[in-house]
Each structure stands twice: as C-alpha cells, then as structure tokens.
Image (cartoon, rainbow, N blue to C red; front, side):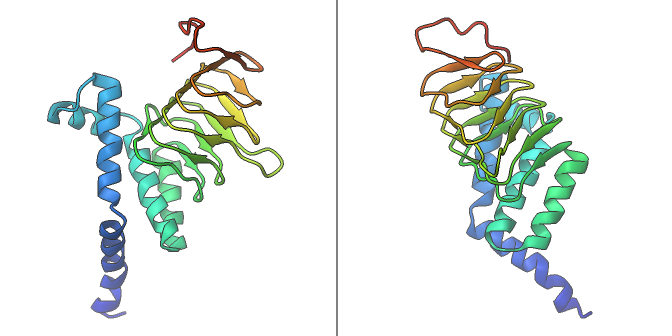
Length: 198
C-alpha cells in the first residue's frame, strides 16, 4: 500500500472534523461539564473537566457521531468499540444529541441507537436509555438523568426535566417536571425536588 493510500483515511477524517464543526461541539461539551462540576468555565476548570471520568466517552461519542454522519461506518465502529472498552459506556452509532452532551460519569451507561436528545443533556453513571419493541425514548433539552435511572420505550422527556436516581421511567415526563420512583411518577414543578437523587 502506498503512502498516499495510507494517508487518505486521516485526510478524510480531518476534513470531516473541520467540516462538521466537531471541535466546537467537543469544546461546548467540556465547557458544559466544567460549569456543571465546578461552577465556572475557566481554563483550569475546563482542564479538570477534560481529565475527569466520562470525558473520554464524550469525545469518543462525538467522533463516532461525526463518522456515522459521513457514512464512515468502519471508523464509527472503531470509536464505538473504544468507548465500550475504555469508557465503559455503550452508545449506539445512531444516537443523536445536540450541543452540551455531558456524561458526568460514563461507567455502565447504555444508550440505544435510535435515541434522540436535545441540548444540555447531563447523564450520571449506570443509566440505561433503551428501546422497547423497536421504539426508543426522545429527550428534550436541559435534561438531568440521575445515577441508575432506566428510561425505556417510546417515552418523551420534556425540556427542563430531572430524572431521579434509580427511577424507572415508562411514561412521558412533561416540561419542568421531576420523575422519581419505580415506576416513576411525575412531580409537578411546584413540588420540592430535594428527593431527586444525583
């Protein structure tokens, strides 16, 4: 194989990353994580966020997402497997999230390929967002999902929602509500949310 042929995949990857603004998405994810963890977006806080658990999985997800959109399936599969092995996190190749996708901890996170989410999604460890009979959850924007939560089937999480630790969500969660319990029940916006695990 010639040197030109060897360089081609790397040139294609670089072009893809620039064209998709992947670096902007990655920076936005890290800024959002720094603000969540440390309450600031200073260089020091961003560096700490970059080195915390879960950030590797976030990076692999963005690279996988970009590869998938460019139909570079073998490359997407490589990033998927790297995420599973090193990030201890399984995110389907078709899963789609907007800006500020934050894995606070990535261990044990499983997200189905057909899941779609908006912006500012914050996920703790051991969370499952899975399909039931081929139908997957849809997430709005500004959503927090606590440790161990399970969101299963054709449910929708509205904007500005919170899912408590270990909750099992099988019904829609309206905007500005918190879901707690097994099966989860929705707390209206005016009820206290101190019961939500994080």
